[in-house]
Length: 452
Image (cartoon, rainbow, N blue to C red; front, side):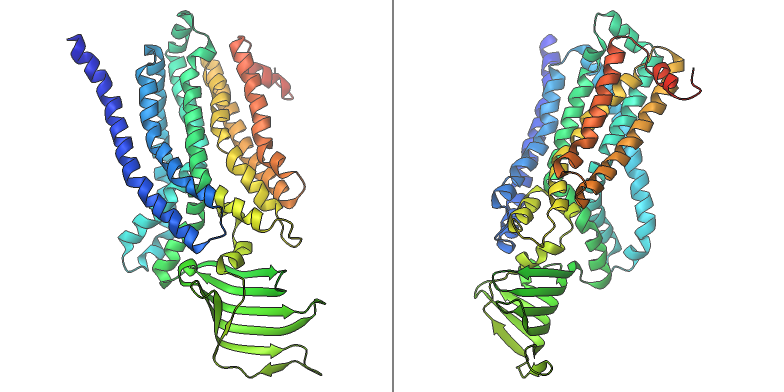
């Protein structure tokens, strides 16, 4: 009898592990193929960084199995705490995602209806939208679910009962802290590439569905100091890295004295990956050195130039830093290292933020745990109010410091980590007061004018 019970206890972790392995077998080759295509289109990208993407996805697939085995070998009280929290987490995550998806669906339904296949477009759009939204709302879902879970257990005197077994507050919330670590790892994996990519590409699905095409970037200005050419590209089509076609291109060439010599305007410019040259079509070429006024040079409808610039180099200044993952940011920063006209601060700030932002998940657990654990009905509402206030403060602080960092008013690394540092100190203070048994809500209330 005990042998059958033991087999059942190990059956579900083994099943989750097998599902994780199957997911790895399915996902990793597809991601490797996507990486190869990206490197083919952007040969000067951060190849090492992109090569790590399949392995990170593999880790993401195996995280549930790792969590299942940790749960299996945990004590009964830890498993009970984990079950209570995960139930609350599933409810909060499902409710928030449903609300946000329904709100977004209502806003975009008119655009979806213009597509030929509305259902397929909706599936594609929300397949991209949900991962990006998941990363954004994860810290706040952790906060709400933790407050609900601990508040419920506090009202039923379950926290007091656990303390009477000899466990301290820190030991009681250890499963929650472990959940915060897992959440931070998940968020870091998404932040590495897929979250920013999804945020930047979800709107392209609607554009393609409505018009049949979309632009990856528009009105991009690129300066090449070696060739002394300045490119202004009207639009980069969605698949430009495969086709090599750019639209509405204007190119100014300069001499060694930085005086303009020629101006080339073309409706399309196509890069040949095989022959390493550009073909300009429907163009006009103007001699800017002609005296007394510039004159148009007679040219055929299509000309070819052996110029060194490539489409993936030209598009980089037009890429939004908030839509780039760590490998893309590495590539951009390396390509513009020492370039005086390139403002590297926004991209450097976002690079640090990709690593700093996931830690918010763990800090949220540290903030909510001492505020969610109360020993009287009076303290519950006050703790929840403080936690929600601190959560709003984190959201504002993160946006505030990022803006300052991108504008150059703060060092990028400090701008990215300032929110973490401030609220980690607040969390440690609150945790210390809860562990030592000193009041939290009443102490904070005394700091407010008129509070007693």
